[in-house]
Image 1 (cartoon, rainbow, N blue to C red):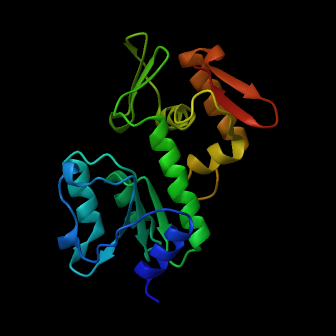
Image 2: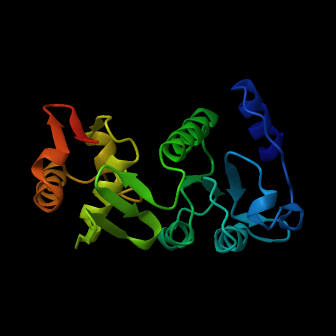
Length: 209
């Protein structure tokens, strides 16, 4: 059985309706034509590169979560996809259960913050522009601090475990050491206010709404 058919069967078993388009030429180009909750996009298509389609979608305002499927495990390929707007990567061969879990994870994140501008209390975040304001004043965050804030802001008011944060902050390599994670949390607290990030000892951190 080819991958497309196997994917459709796995998604159907999870009560997820899917449409399988085999070629890049068959895919919608404009945001208005993409009436879906999520896209699974193979990097290697019969008539072109899935990365080119990804770039075209993001340039035309497509804002749905996109998970790239690839046989390439090289760092440069994955970095190009993430920089072009991919929300996640999964490398072949993979377990269907892992793919389903990733689909549900990106759908949860998008359900929390569907807009390009996230407003959480007095915080205003523009994830794709790497900018954040508090009370109308733009904050000067280093990359790790911004990434940490983004991960906490995906589910404000919900505890995110240290393990999850460590993995998300270093998705293409070994998880970030907890000691480094704690340093970034401390630095972020100094910039947005100590009371905005709550520690649940032995579990993780929560962005206070």
